[in-house]
Length: 256
Ligand SMILES: [Zn+2]
Ligand SMILES: [Zn+2]
Image (cartoon, rainbow, N blue to C red):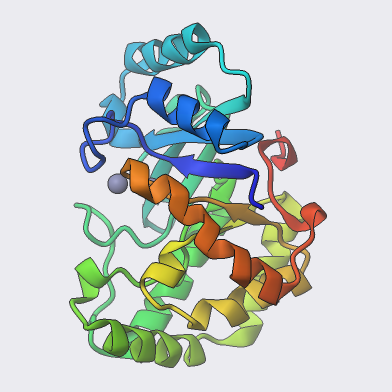
């Protein structure tokens, strides 16, 4: 049974469903026996305006949930040391999820080729390093997870390409970054998208995270109501990895 979900979008995110209000999410998650959740819209949803952030925080207060609800944000690395959100704006949120591979968004550095697994591997590790080095990152969301929308492969092709890419990631370089993440209390997201997109190459990566004492953040990245329930797809994976409660990331683990 999964009791937390720290990556949920509301209707404030243009890419999410219109019926996804804060009130509805909380109502459903209460029924689902969730203990603690996090609302995390894309940073561009707020158009860099403090008033918009405060209005969302006010809505949360008014709902007065019976479960623990955190107010985070999803940002992305554009390139090394360049983030989509400013440090000042980030300070209004409980935590910052940093996406290293939002290639569909403008301004995000892209691999030289989306068809060469070696090139994609080099770029993914570069962006991962950038996310870990960033002072406002509390957790890195969906690293090394390849989106079918970006890669335009069939599910089988994408699965094979993912394996090939992961083989091209230099282990020492990856371990060095995971040790930094562990020291700084940075979580790594494990998302049901890996099941939906058939990305088995991530199992070995999560295993390595656990070996290096990096905590895993459970996040559905739900953009509609149905995807809120997809969190249960992670149950067999968490069992396979042998994850225990103490290995899960929570907002209290962030370093201030
Ligand atoms: Zn989105
Ligand atoms: Zn998201």
